Image (cartoon, rainbow, N blue to C red):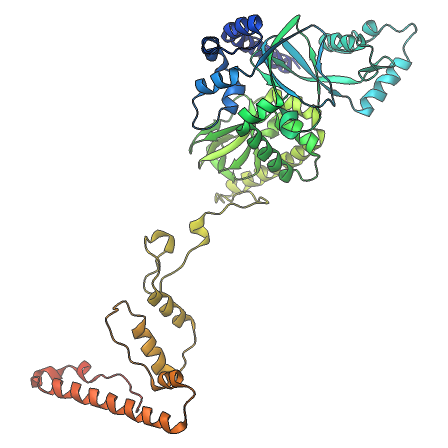
Length: 504
């Protein structure tokens, strides 16, 4: 328990440091927007550009091929300044999304409805309490102090949506601070708000952009978000789109080069990965155990089992594109996406059992690495299209040229059974498809008759006789030329080797 508290305290300190750094970067932008409300002149936009360029919102939505500074100047004129005080609701659960917000200074809490089981359990506890009921004193030692403060704020709203019969109907799952943005999910998906936003700092200063301007300027983000949502819907076909939408907002996309160490055995657990495309190798004690590829989760086993240190080493083998989610973000996401967490637990059990199996195989000397079976298998083109040449066992993908018609004909002839009836016709076809284009081909008489078809029987016999006479004359002339050679030339038996003719 002490380890978990120490880790939580470390995460809180890191968040405070990052928040103060963001506030320092956005100090100039806060001064200009708070005094003008909306910036129109070029000088003011140039002054706030360095601060806006540090925002993750700008980096994520900047179109490819556009300089970040230019995009900040273009987008800066569409932002409008807003401010709220402690306890205000910026927007409610179920509202129609009309704006996206960027926090210049302050903090907000993200609230989602509690499950029916949680509400009923709390009602039973309250029913057994002494009367008159004091909310703060009753929950003082049963809930975190920050959670009690939030529930008291919701009770002061005098709305049964948030507080009913001394039971809080919403719970905090996340918080945003200076330099972060929120509210873009509803604009991209054109769905109602999936959470309420409550101000938890004394004051909060924001800049907002309307839905119309956001979709024009951030077309890239809208397209990528829709593509990401469609991908996860296919990955989790039995999960509702609303729950998937809440879960994927904590994911960040990253491109990794080959041979990149993701983590080493014994390091602290900080995140887990979903491999979109690529290949990752898992090792333990320097021994390769298995590989995972597309659509595979990796690194979530330790997080689900509350293990703080890595049990194995992991590195990329190919250029890899993946989504990653940090440890703290996952703890927030698991509250809003219980069905997805159940699937991840099942995958973690499968991965753990496979890991144990591979350990046993390695101990026995079976160190051949087999990739984990996946629903979608990625194969390379050179593995799918391998064509062997009849002369040389060459791979077509390694040749700069295509196979010739002659090669294809020879390859097909080797596969086919020999046909003695059409032997002469096949010989003439081989000559025709030869690479030497200047060789004249000899057609069989059957070919000539087919061209003259229909024809009577007498004409066929005349053509057959004419073809035989021409063939004999050519053979005799060839023999007379060879007879003029010396007697020594006839010593080679290959001289008398002739091809079979139609007369034989």
